[in-house]
Image (cartoon, rainbow, N blue to C red):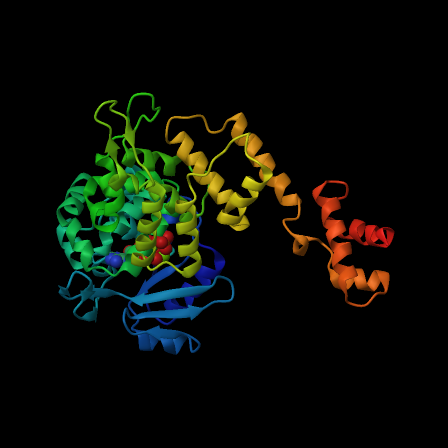
Length: 443
Ligand code: ATP
Ligand code: MG
């Protein structure tokens, strides 16, 4: 038996007292049955929007889906949608009409997957499509006829992959076959909706399995053809340690990228896409090369970022990580070279860049790290402690003038330069108190 939080059962009681049926439905029931955290609560009822609004005067109503949103004190917002049935769909996206159903069973019949088509009224579970059986069997299975479901709304194919990646489930055979047959319909879906589902796949616990599902069902060739083609690019040549084709390498890199950030994972998945068009095999030696693949890859990352309508911040991060992923790690590098690296990647993305490299290494069959790599990380920290320029000193001209009671003039600059040299030579630290003290001494 499922126990509902008090705030939820109190809320449902308001409907029941007014003689309406109300059920928890969708992801909430699914996650309760899986003992997973519930992040949003969806309800379905036989009350129509006007009646719901009468019960909750501070609610608001979205005409497109018939959903009424009700602010709650405890948990953000309750979304209540009257039992719906859907008329015929047009253009693989929108139902051409929206109408109310009489029973909860009918409402469950228009939902996407069996594990999402379970309702609970606080006492009994309504499960006409055997969703509980599929929860136990770890299966994502379309409700009723898979072809029909995907033709009605092609985004459901991506949602199916997303749920599989989030829950660690497999996609049921018939459902999977139907996705393979209908994959092309995804072109009718807006890139905003595709992006939201794709980023959820990347954010999930099983992102690489998700991408492989996309690959095996053909969806990948529509949403990321740049990655899809990489599965045909070999990289094994004499004297090279690469064990995988480029596509498999990308998926393995994603699998082993320690970052949970979806954009860092996205960058890890696409970091080598430039290899597809820069592939060359030398005739005599059989050696494979990919000259300047990171330059080509950067351009492709720009196209992908625009296509997926990423925000400016996300775009900048994705492109930077792809463009810089070939960075050198060597004990022979000068501090200056390391500083240049930090500048081109940007301090904010350093950890993401290192995480991409970890994925890249393991995804090529190498060990997660090496002494060289560890030394490089230490030096990144060390170099950042040194000021890069006078303006990075933890003290400025104003401070100098105040301490020495002098007016603006060349002396201020001379003193700042002296302090800067002392810090660079590691005679003192770039630390405010120490610098203030030193200023008084220099004079
Ligand atoms: P989560 O909120 O964890 O992402 P969810 O299952 O609650 O998962 P929502 O997008 O919140 O997903 O949708 C709530 C429910 O509405 C789903 O469980 C499903 O029953 C139904 N649903 C949502 N989108 C669709 C769709 N495109 N086609 C059919 N049913 C859908
Ligand atoms: Mg939900």
